[in-house]
Image (tube, rainbow, N blue to C red):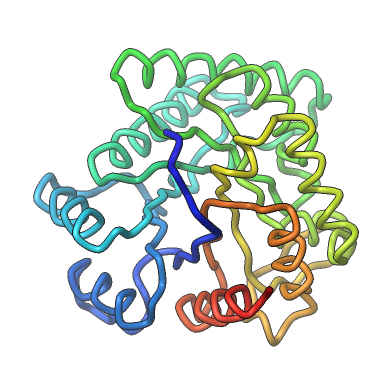
Length: 281
């Protein structure tokens, strides 16, 4: 699971837009042409990837020293009131982890649950119980990838920073995926200054140790939000997302790993982020 990262790397959320109707082969060519560092596989509607494609992706990752992560399907709710939906959610996370193993991805992420009107502590225990099932399977199958619930962008969704740090303390193979845009939206416009970014990173290191900062997996995009939280993603320069101070804070704390760009113009903003980060002393 641990990678020997020498810096922060910049990934696109899915294949670059310029890929058009092309294949993963073309997508990786574009990433190389743009001097980007890899991509996050987006299993939006389900983990559907043939063995042939898995091998193609794995070979491309090895040949180009790309970094790969994977995002689980959106149809996940470990706190569903329907047991069959909970079981299906667990299975989708396991399937995402298996695809990560097959393709050479080092980390997976997903939106874990909704509160469904229940007390936060009750929901935490339910998420923890289902995470135990996930970890039991990935350990049995020798799937050595990080399992990462993502910080979420709405108050109705389980997954504020404290909840995800707390869950990470329960399992050796679990770490947070920090979506800075979601933290910004969830708080109605806070979590967007250099000092606030530093506090988040300091908390990660203090609570979970250096591994949380040196095997980092995060998301960033411009974001539109209301008092209720996230509405939709925007391009960085069309939003109030203070990405420059975020990257400065990440540099200050020596964060190493990957930052996946989820802006609508994924490769353009990923390149914007990398170029600015590389300009920092």
